[in-house]
Image (cartoon, rainbow, N blue to C red; front, top):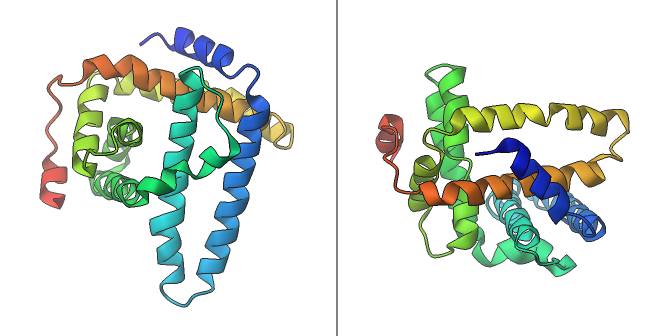
Length: 210
């Protein structure tokens, strides 16, 4: 996985699309906040409904939008909602990833961090393979990232400077930084896809959780 090459490709892929990507991000942010607020007004079940339907579906939408961008397509505003056609699968993937990461974190923080990278490709796999179950997506993500978790960790650290730039510009730089980061991770996903079926690490806690 050539980090510099993947990031360079991302810069080229988002050229000319920053405007539409900003609008899509803005739509997702506003709608997500609004719906979450309104559902939160419903006693007991409102916040749960938001966690099940809104957040995972928009997360899947973002992945699909950037898969389009990296694939050379220009997304439309309506694509901000494309994850809702499979919101239940999106919820199951995000729920199980959160659960498994939490269980590994009980063994101290570091195992949880390592597993968060192991599961990081799960939603990308679902985005391209709607028929796959949540467990299949997670298992394939573990296979894909086997031997690459250290590289993924270093990649995440490489964006710290860009995150700081976003902060000191009062969020203005995020208009470019967010697409840059998302496009880079889609490139990472594509670079790891051929690695599928490499024997994965034992998932002792995962099996116990299931």
